[in-house]
Image (cartoon, rainbow, N blue to C red; front, side):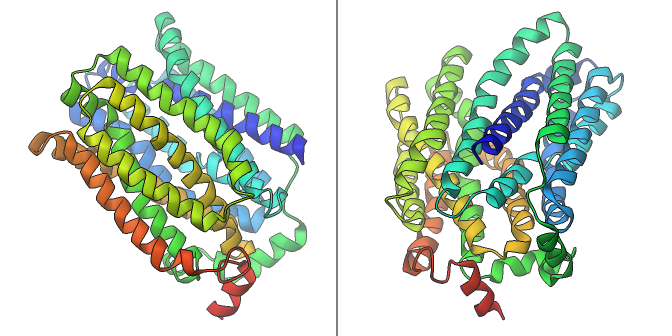
Length: 405
């Protein structure tokens, strides 16, 4: 299992490294084709919108036909999208490249589903924490590397990203075996919970515990994305921080997230129930984001974003781990895809919400709104999740299935 975990860690790291190489360069590349600010905004959201629509479907396909085939298709699509990006000679081709990557780029949720298949419930948090650490590490290194590579031309970061994705594709083909048995895939193909329709997706919200976890994920995603997406703008408007200082603060968030998900979560999850970890981290985030919104100095920012990053890391891993234990075994991929879709939706709408809040009320309103959204999440957790025995009560897969039937 350790070898498989190491391979998946490398897979996610390389995948996110390639993605984050080009992310900061998109506005500058779009300007080469005389794109308007509105068109640049649409370009930045096109990938997220496509991923929001496709992620649950990719997840359900992986439940029915296996993780490995979907990983191969997904990574192959990423290779093609980066090549299109590199050689784009019109704005239309640039849009196509980002939409294609979104439609086929559900690599992270597929990797989480794979980890779920190869780990037992006791070690689930450790495996999923490694995925989070690889994710964060890729985002720490990628933007800086992309900026340096762009000195040789904007085509170069795209080609490097394509090469990294090609390495991933070869790694999947050669070293990643299928994690589902034929019997498990056959059961998923026969199950009514993996059929492709909107009603089945929404029925996931009715599964005891899993439904509540997805609702909690919605509010958390909106709140934390308000912080993450609008961090630079709030820092600029409230403290007039330079780009260099803001970048260092964001790097600090990334480093703390990697340490938390890679080292801390696996240790504390063995001592504290995951439902309680979710609740405790939510409370920390409420006060942390509220304080961040009203912070007046750089040092106040530093003091606040460290617990914010740690709490967010604990929340993400604990919720994902508990979600995999709560849903039907044959629909883990689809459920994780739905959770990713919720997060992607938040990434699409929060720049608009944050921009309006900053314009009409000021930077403090972003932190205040995020704290209120997390307050709703904490209310759901305290009234429902904390009352459920963990992990063998209503949050267990068997109990969920019995109640649903």
